[in-house]
Amino acid sequence: MPPVESSELIELRIGAVANGGSCVARHEGRVVFVRHTLPGELVRARVTQETKNFLRADAVEILEASPDRVPAPCPFSGPGRCGGCDWQHVAVPAQRALKAAVVEEQLRRVAGISREVVVEEVPGAPDGLGWRTRVQFSIRRDGAVGLRRHRSHAIEPIDECLIAHPQVEALGIERKRWTGASGVEAIVSAGTGDRLAVLSARGRARVPRMDAPVRLVSERNQEKPPFVREDVAGRLWQVSGSGFWQVHPGAAQTLADAVLDTLEPKRGEIAVDLYCGAGLFAGVLGERVGSDGLVVGIESDAQSVRDARFNLRDMPHVAVERGEVETVLDEISFGRGKNRLNRADLVVLDPPRTGAGPDVVKRVATLAGRRIAYVSCDPATLARDLALFGEQGWTLSALRAFDAFPMTQHVELVATLVRG
Image (cartoon, rainbow, N blue to C red):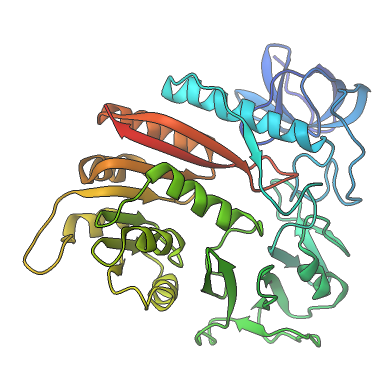
């Protein structure tokens, strides 16, 4: 079979959506992953990558459009341009249907689980715009601001990001010159109004005038970072610098409520929060189990551990341990005084996109007694880990999906696992 030139246009009938934001088509017997399209459409696409087993392509001309196609609101989206959004061309309800289809397919194919999925709206962005409270901007050599193109180090200059929260746009980062910088991250809190810019520098950077704190990050500058405060679950949470926090203004509360609903914690129970970050789930669990219960959070990032301990300082029955999850689970003793417990009633885990993996799954399956809540931002790794939990005797009893990343292919999931 002759190779396909990367600039060649091919006509394709588009099939189902795939994990990753593309849709699947076929060309001369090979699979083609096509961006900027929708199932059922007929398009002309430009090949952007060829491998032994598949092609990647961008739809550059729509010959037969889906009824779910809409004009992209962002002028910087589209083939070969900003890679931050996958589905600017898709009506918001259809975006959620596509995400549900991806989750269902991954569960069925990877874990052997057949389940209907409904992706729920997260309050705060009904039109899918103006929600992202943390944006990592890239800086060109001339100081111009932009975002990375899809699967590329190339920078697409922009003067506005439509999915960025209004407080991010109020910083005016895209309309300033950042000479000597390699990147700048805008961090805002929709609940408290706190704003912060984290600047990464190639060398000596020229910082434009800002009405918010600017932290300079370089090899010589490792001082304690400033923080923003988040207002969730009736408490203030300190999150330092680029520490992890949900980027949708409604996501943290939504997920905290979902975890409590699925675990149904009772007073006096023991709970474990793995990959606990700034301590959100540990905190809401700590309030439910009360002072006669116990919650242990585990986190590997040193600054996140400091934040979590500060945030939970008024809860003596909540402890936060620093270390890799699998290592700490091997070492830690749960309980008080001389009582050593090798079982926790409840476990919640919110691992990175790579998932928990077999070692952590085995430890959690042995540790957990009543219920497990698995929070995931990746359907593929969640499905893989659910299959691993199944091998350890745990069953998926419920699954909720949340549209915490409108205009993108990403989705947030909360899985409930029970024994048997």
